[in-house]
Image (cartoon, rainbow, N blue to C red; front, side):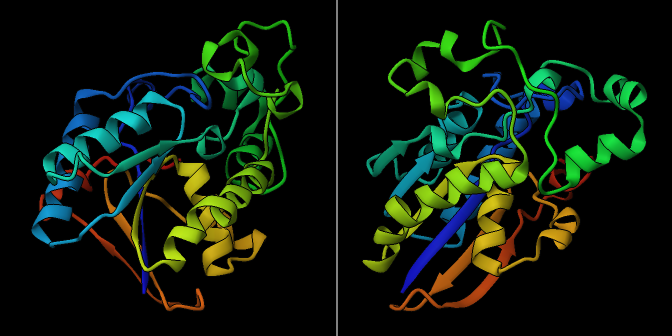
Length: 242
């Protein structure tokens, strides 16, 4: 039986400041570090044996995974990173305060983009310094793979493709797989795994630092899914929405 453990990274410095982050590579806030530690303790205390770990290319997810592996004493396992698990790219909204954007564009458009399925923020210019081609980590990627903006639907296409190509083969082997990723890339995987209709995904919340667990049989049929939360109530308080 394969087991998938999805963890949204701990709060980043821009989560705390209410800024659209997307592919911007910001670090964890002190609270995010603590959330990652709690997730690691939960894996350790629940005796969850992780066989392999995946994360995005973004350091808030990488750091979360690294902290979890250190606390759970599993730093020796294989750790694979892929841009296909990156957060959704928020285009020209990246780096902007969410409240300011909401006032500019209005409530309807704001929530359609932020919580909807197929709406995207305004695109970046390819000459904008926020465009991924200006970051060394993406220099090997073809320009057609570098987004100027993304909807959740776009994020799902790349994340689910990676899931089937790389993660599912590990699950078929009966491994327990840890994925440290982002609110929207995790929501994208949940759409696929739980067969969530597009018009229902806006209701799905992904809290930072908790364990979303999916158990599969040998035919990759989902047998059970549940959430494990640290006992500390502080983790749940002020856990802002995506």
